[in-house]
Amino acid sequence: MRAVVLRSFHAPLEVEERPVPAPRNGNEVLVRVLACGVCHSDLHVAEDYFDSPLPLVLGHEIAGEVEGLGNVLVYTPWGCGECRFCLKSEEMICPDAKEAGLFQDGGYAEYVLVPDRRYLYPIGDLEPIEAAPLGCGGLTPYRAVKHARSWLGPGSRALVLGAGGLGQFGIQYLRILSDATVHVGDPSAQKRERALELGAEDAAEPAALEGPYEVVLDFVGSDDSLAHAARLVNRQGVAIVIGLFGGRIPFGLGGVPHEAHFLSSIWGSRDELAELIDLAQRERLEYTIDTMPLDRAQEAHDLVRRGEARGRIVLVP
Image 1: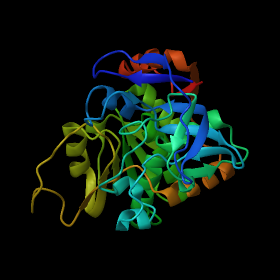
Image 2: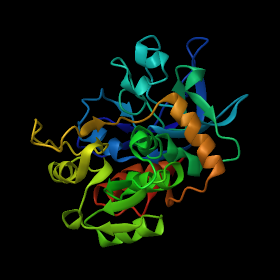
Image 3: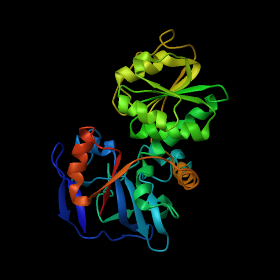
Image 4: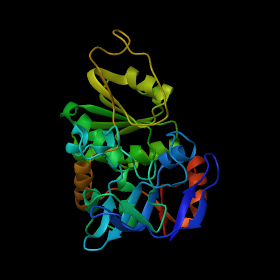
């Protein structure tokens, strides 16, 4: 089979021929990859952000085909299966998790070996190419919005900081799953325009925003965006950071609004992936997809790195 392999950090991806992996026990399942989304986290792997083992096949937004199940999405945070997080289906929080594409071979290939059938979720009549980005790009903001819902009653206001790929999902989930008024902060005029098309009531540069907001969802996670989140969140509200930019802010009594909650939100659970597939079958989620063949994976990374990808790039073997 063809596979895209990272052999050295900060080096170009390589396409090579490998044997099709064979299940080694009764639990493992061979998945024929139909589509694999390119996520910004894939670039972090290539840049040694996670200290991933090499060589490694990247890719964690995997849609594929399994004999007897049909087309599936693969839940790729593979946990130990025994800790309290795994027992709640929250395997992305498992301290011993070995995520596909980050610590085990992932979906930039024609086949991927999945350790257990519990990680396979049938997608019904959803197109695999359209479904693939839901595995991370769609799932991560879904969990964040679920965290936020208890703060979002009638008359509440929610703010999305960063209207890129994940933020655009977040806007739509807030509109579908809450009664909140949704505002967006982003320095890009193009992204602000897109946010309004997706249902945001207002969009502005972050420095021009005026709070307070019951919920602030920070899809950037930089020093600057976190400072805006702390400035704009309401007393007893919640600021949720989802972005991986590595920012920090001072925290202490009197340094942030009284009794405001500050929360990180990571990926999503297996149960939430099932919920999201159901939601995608019921609601029209708007996001742009560009397909590229597997051997153009490095080109896809370059486009994402330069900020030139029009939407979600999906590799098709």
